[in-house]
Amino acid sequence: MKTYSLDELTDKYIGKKGTDKRNNFESELRLDLLGQTIKKVRLERNLTQAQLGELVGVKKAQISKIENSFTDARFETILKVFRALNAKINFNVELNHTTTAY
Image 1 (spheres, rainbow, N blue to C red):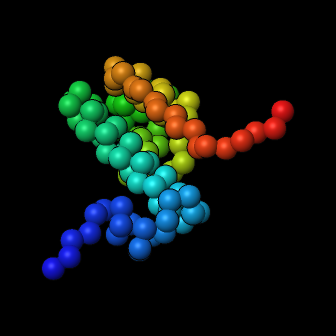
Image 2 (image 1 turned 30 degrees about the vertical axis):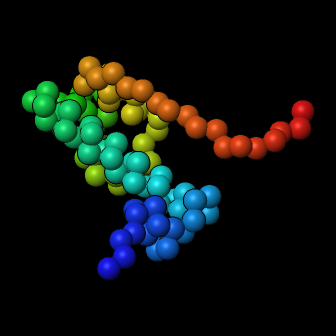
């Protein structure tokens, strides 16, 4: 029986890296992980969604949507959520190899 790596399966069923379908899939996956992380930290801090919403300045429903990846929350809102949770965040930006004419 042949075994396949996750990348091989993703290439086959979602699309090769760099394709729109693959990029959308990976973007949605990252948003899902972000929402799960926010929920986990919120629960560790013993906060309800309503309490976190008050700290951030949004309604409970917005926190629920962020945690469940049902919204494309503004970057500023995500930063406010992590600040309210007293959590340090790091972002990794990876540039594609492209040539740019100036």
